Length: 379
Ligand SMILES: *Cc1c(COP(=O)(O)O)cnc(C)c1O
Image 1 (tube, rainbow, N blue to C red):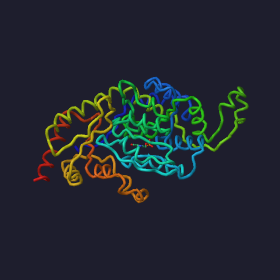
Image 2 (cartoon, rainbow, N blue to C red; image 1 turned 30 degrees about the horizontal axis):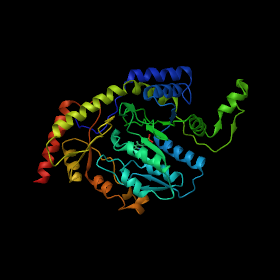
Image 3 (cartoon, rainbow, N blue to C red; image 1 turned 90 degrees about the horizontal axis):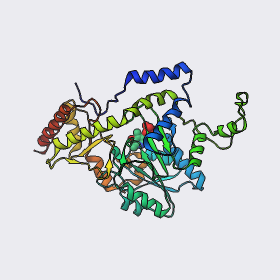
Image 4 (cartoon, protein in one colour; image 1 turned 90 degrees about the vertical axis):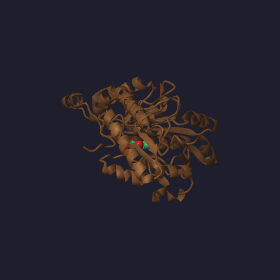
């Protein structure tokens, strides 16, 4: 059987039990399990606030929309981002009529603090840092840089459920952290995410904005009787971005197993590292020292990547590429050539299969096939 890149592993009976509770209660929407998921996520991460969303993409949009309106940023103000990410990160900047300015990456595949610094102008307002594969790269230096330069820092933690830095879950030192619980992420639902602000006022505002701007809090302060449910106020335009109880039900089960699953992912990485060590044609993307990565991805670099990828498909092994340099896309190609390191990485990176059904033997099989293919292509 073919070895796939990602296969979500759902604990089906537990998921069905959680979903059954929603159906029996007749509550599948916002509230109930979404609140339970938020509470469990706060408990797990230690983050003070968390709001459950329909995706990470909407969370990135919300974060920028909220900062833009709060601080009076104007259209065309700049947000520094990475070209080596899923397009959501950069689309969120465009949704908000802000301008993505691409900074280059380092060997961790995350943004380089020096390169961010070079891209700062008088119109720079924020930085979005993406922890590729769960890796933190040089994130602490980026935190410091943003503080020093008065820039808002958004952490796109789509790959970082369970990533710890110096023993602490990531997300505590960003102005906003957004997680993804999409189907192939390491905490899988089908589609959902979590937005975490360090401060209560923004958490309250985001709850309102994810439900069309409907000010339920004012309602609940003013009217306690259910007959006044329609008496809410709307004081700013919001979106339909909140998550629902069915997704939260699945998320609660995935969260229960997150540490166990991530530990297995780290074991897979160790097996890969052992099998691929001492091969100068394979470079393993390094994980930061203080980082206990979620290991959402295991990435290597090889020089003739496209050929190798095709050849591995013949061995029924399906690796992936995370990601294509976004400045190659027509939408972003006015920035083509501005990030040579990301551009080169984009042609060399390969993500090897990472999921709960991969065994030590599979890792050996994949590594042997990879070495075989590389040898034949190099010779
Ligand atoms: C998956 C992903 C997103 C988008 O997450 P959704 O929950 O699918 O919207 C954003 N950024 C990165 C880096 C991702 O991998």
